[in-house]
Image 1 (cartoon, rainbow, N blue to C red):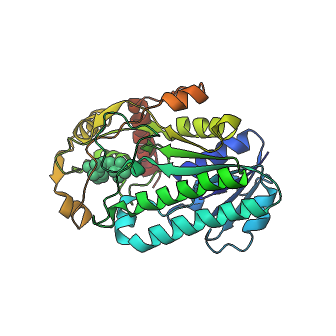
Image 2: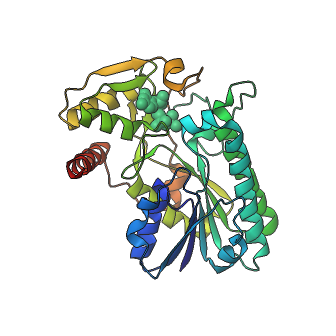
Image 3: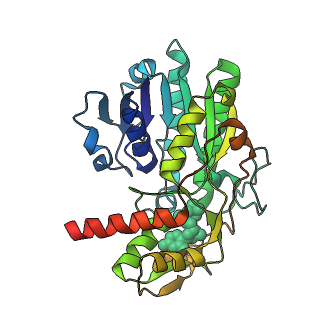
Length: 326
Ligand code: UDP
């Protein structure tokens, strides 16, 4: 199979690269390296089945050719991460919406129908407070809130494009709403909590909990996520569907901090920071977020293999190994 991965040098994309190259597929990655790192795919650069292009999805001259070559496309290229979204509210909308539309238009014009998997996000559920979030729920938009919701708005626009291309142009698109995904190669630089807590715990520095820490998330290891994405992309009954992808073991951010300290056997204290200090501006956090996985489990049989403790242990060992090597 020929696989095109936009944003493939990012954290999730690079795990998809590993998976498809292991299956002896041919993989082409396009990434502008704005948040991804070439080092994430460096191990494959000499593999004749792998090709890497550094380019922006919005302007990439060879997009049409790459799309025509592909049997399957994972569209992950996007401006991501809370710090970046707050810093570049216009880029988030412009890049994420224009990039997705350009890609879908290229697929429409390429003369045949590769499978497309579009990465959306649990952020689209916005400030809903339901215990479990279901794909068919109405969504809440807060138009006057600060640019904090621009990522969600961009992903909603992408979803609408994808579903419209699926319905009117017969493009086999699956939209996945990814819940908090964690694991090797995720950077804490753009705000993601798990790599930040792991580095802080290993370094013996205070773990920076934003707000009161009562907010909760359910985390999934990226190595489980990519198995689910691969299976969903290959499943014909997902065409034109939105599917939640994640796990449903919720944990509060306070508990997560305690867990990281315990697993790292660290003496780090926990420090609570107000949102204004943490994000440099007013911020509406999501109090809890847990997916309803009924649709996912009706489509694929895969069950996640990684517990949060196993992921934390693995990340802690990797940080220690890296620090020992430097
Ligand atoms: N968070 C935190 N300390 C950090 C980074 C994040 O307490 O150093 C909090 C953040 O405010 C949010 C949760 O952890 O409540 C998850 O943040 P992340 O950015 O990883 O994911 P998202 O908010 O998109 O679910």
